[in-house]
Length: 426
Image 1: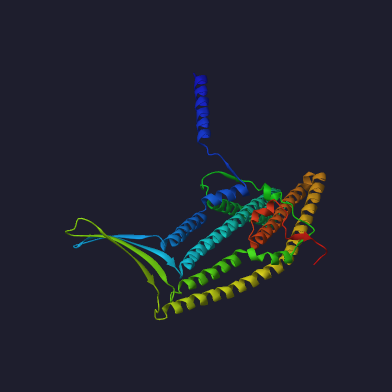
Image 2 (image 1 turned 90 degrees about the horizontal axis):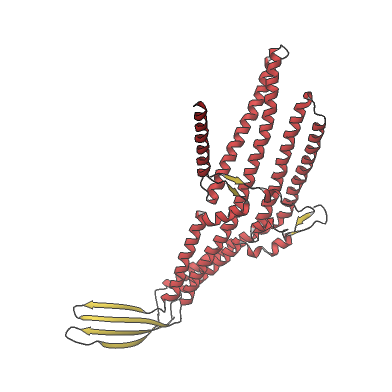
């Protein structure tokens, strides 16, 4: 009977495990490209901009049909009823300008959407880099905490045997607690960034996610290269801000043309069918009307002037933006050299840390256990610094792609065209 109870308990436990596995959520593996793809589909700001584009496209189509689409009215009063139709046949004035203004509004919003999509790619890469750095920082602090705890515990044993004093014990406890606090801070930072990534790509916060850093970590840093500032300057015309400012100038100029109404004739056709009380049939009539505005108190003149002044203001702003972008292009080679200097330093540090770890392993003895532990934590910290330098280079190149209005993710699949072989040190 006792054996039967044990078998029953095992069966119940097995059923519970099977049930738990059925309801367990599948772990979502998220790499940088998959994250970008999900963000494009679920990001609320992108969805909002797409809806605004649809709205503006509808307004554009409305402007195309508004002027020449026939207007029909049914009028019923005590005298009878009538059906009236009006159609604009020719418009020598501002119709095309109104259509052009609506079209430019759509183009501006589309440029905004493209820029926001590029920013999403850069921001998600930043979050991936931040998450990895938090993970490696936690690993470093965990190794340092373990070493400090062993030293702290060893010192307490020495104190019990009368071979140490309370000052040394307190000192090692302080070091141990300090590393533990840093570990907890790194873990909190990791969880915060992971939740931010989930929110950013539209994943439920309670769903298990494993982030794949391989594409970023495998990125081959282009060494012995420098940034070609002339290439950047020649291709700044595709920059988002310059393109938008150019469209804004065209928009205000088109709106200004809409205000030119004096001496701009319109030819319209009128058709009517009326039936009065006491009559048994409709009477039809038609007419052509030529309308020529002669004077409106200079209202249209001042409105046109206001819009043209706004266009000139945007032109001035566009030139200011151009100068800022030119400065960024000219500064890029020096920023690149700075980042490469950090990368080479991190690479040398990682090489030394590996050699030091190999030496500590070969000399491992009980008395030298702490040396091995320090060498391991140093190697992990070197890996963290090397990854950080690599991430900074990736993000820098992505921002340069964005400066030229190009897809930032191209940096992961090709060597950037604005990098050239370095002839010598700057």
